Length: 373
Image 1 (cartoon, rainbow, N blue to C red):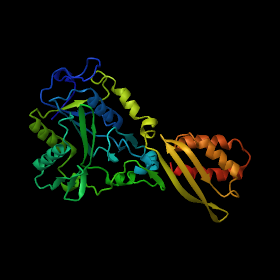
Image 2 (image 1 turned 90 degrees about the vertical axis):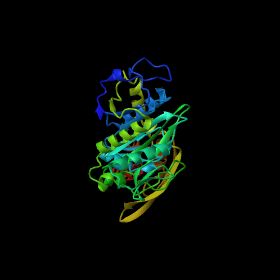
Image 3 (image 1 turned 135 degrees about the horizontal axis):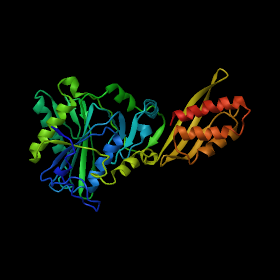
Image 4 (image 1 turned 180 degrees about the horizontal axis):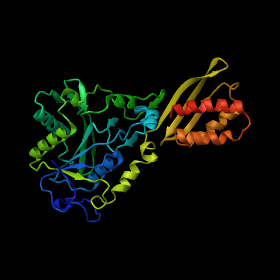
């Protein structure tokens, strides 16, 4: 049962740190179930961070439901170039986010439920949370064969992944969050989470591909609303609290002081791309020139999302060495992204405005370079 969060006087946030007095007005004795009214991935991730940073969870666990409009979310220690199709993400206007927990890359849309279990560090127990979800699923559909694995995934019929897990453990508090596939766009999921980029060498955490399936494919009555209500009921029974799902607005500064600055930080290029562990790209591609193919070699070192070393090699009869040297040196220190590369190469082109053949070759090369970004 959903309850609008205009009922601010029903709850009280007990802060671990000094923040302005605000928020829920009545003490929660045994636990709380909340559901975000926002479908923005950055706002919902910020809500997770805020609760983790400011709530006193001693004997007051929280279950947080949230869903997002189409988004790709990578783990704290992942490489987006290695994990997803960034070109497709840009073309489709999909949001890309880096969360503060570990784990692999996931695709979110309104057919996917995100569940975050907040507890104290001492009571952090991923397997217990997954077993709770399994009990909830079996309560609404006893015929479902769903099992938790040693990797803390949920498998349907022993082979299809319907839930993946990630977590963050702080000094005194912790959270475990997981997905639950209800009616996600499977075609989009597989297309977006498939990197087309070649030659990446990285120590970043790599995702493990899995077969997936929506619960709605198994039983058309298993809608997101049915599943959330079932999990809420099971959670309430386990924690001996009421099963009301209270709606929250994660942009409300009166409830969550400072939360919007958290959401803004999660949207920055420096966080999404700049936090990528150091990596390099060693690849090559062909360009057509006078009915033959020329091989272009590319070696780039990237640190904090910026180009640290750049060595692009092309036959000097096609592109003069001095031009390549200018390109290599100009890219060093720049963001490893198409928009910044476009700006820099356009500036360089102005140094030889009348050479149309050179412009044509330059544009071909730069489009290829941007294609690996």
